[in-house]
Image (tube, rainbow, N blue to C red):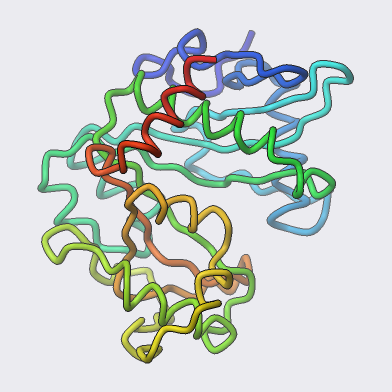
Amino acid sequence: MKQFAPTALISPGAVEARFGRLHLRLVVTEQDMRAVQDLRAVRFRGDPRASDLDRFDPLCVHLLVTDREDGAALCAARLRMLTSLEEVLTSYCAQVYDLGRLAASGLRLMEIGRICLRADHVQDPDAPRALLAGLTRAAQAGGADMLIGCASFPGAAPARHRKALRYLHARHIGPEGLRPGRGAGSGETYELARAAGPVAADDLRRIPALLRLYLAMGGWVSDHAVCDRDLDTLHVFAAVDISAIPPARLRVLQTLAKV
């Protein structure tokens, strides 16, 4: 079988699990990688014939959740352990965020990206839970101190997300000693301070579900957002310090990971 990513830090056996009808595993075959690509083509490009692969894919391990009954791919994600200064500074996030402070921190970072869910399973909680268990297992296997990634809002226009951004600015800006600056390739950015104002009761609901999950785990975000015109998204840098995950939430993750 063709190996699609280095597995020295995260081995397939450390992640694979069965959750009822669902099968969680790392991608190691061409067939599995095609399934991941098909999901991403529809989710991120809106065209099943398009390619969403990039130069980072060979550097990552890929998680896949399938239905054990019919083999259908339900959700996927890619992740990469960043264990050196060079790896942090050449990571996916580093294309548009200056991660110099994080790189100098000595933390073992796990970069998570390209999370996607099949459209007809958006309301199905089981597949995302299985994927979350996989991410937890991978973080444990890799000895990660912190999870990082770009958390996206659909639509690149900042005005469309002003209420969500004001909530993030008021409650979840990261520590100055770790949060990223503007990267050389960031292009159009939006200062979250521009959205500052009184937080309304429904502002949290305007934040994408994945980012809400990160925030529930004690996560924080950058003080600015980046417009991605290629994918028509607006994203913020998001990080979760594993040592700061609330105990109750950590118990849930650990229980999922043991299944």
